[in-house]
Length: 394
Image 1 (cartoon, rainbow, N blue to C red):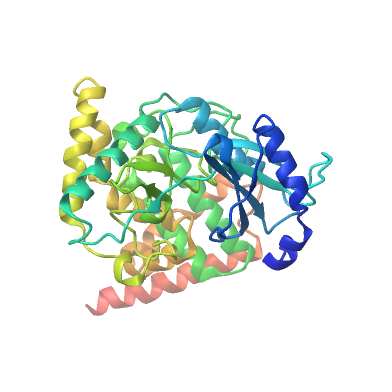
Image 2: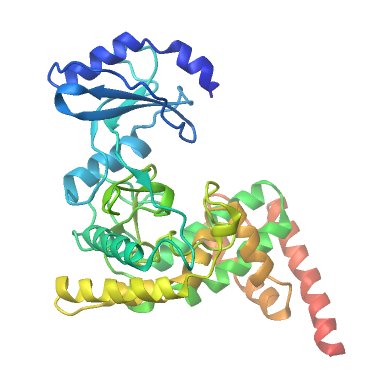
């Protein structure tokens, strides 16, 4: 990682302007007279094209060593190709980190549209106004339906979290996806020889059937922006969405993972974006969620011949989203474990029952005689003895 000031010093700004001009059909350009806010992990420079009445932004990742194409460029190019109605910035050019391409700019970068406007204003039970909320929620519903109803994703986008060896572009069942998500965390805990954490994941492995919507276990996957909070939704003065930013790491996921409330309306414990003030991160927005479901249902009926399967999934998504995110975010995992992974007899026995299925599915990684697994087995036996005493005493 480069410090921001050091990276800025590496950039040949004249070469950057020349590259931008060429990509824009030799239009004259210059840097904007104001500084762009710095993104997390990026240095940003805004470029103006007076004759085109438009602006681009050059994003320079602080990590100038590892390729960013798959998680930064591919999602935006994919959305532009498959879902042209979705208001995502368009990429005009890039030089990937680690590329052999001659790069007079001196640093890897992406050139894309600068979205004019401002982030959605702070959102709570009382603000913005009801009319503004209604307008923004209508547009978010359209965006979500454009993505989900726009056809199943193809192999050009990442199918996130599928088991190793799954052919490219081939979805798996939600059950298989959740199982692999749990097992990935469990394998990590075993490598760290953290038997307590391993027991947490074994308990979660036993919980998987609770969080699978059976009728959608094998539904086609969908692409969804996974971070639809106010900071990533750019609106103009009349609350029309001009663009949605930060599509990094967007991928294909099981339908029930895509069809959830946007973060603008709900954050799971531990999962609020860091830029959201604590006072707004976990407010109860039940009324706004009900409005969103009403809007989404009406739009889905009109677009899907009366079907409201997506709306139904969103309506029941809160607990599932907590479980799903706990498998991919450490802060969320801690919150989930604290609430649902108590060392009760029921949980301990459920975890013990998952040891053999885990070993069968992960033979290439671990065996029952591995030191880490022996330690976990001993921990479970200890917990079974302790909980048996407790239940007998009760």
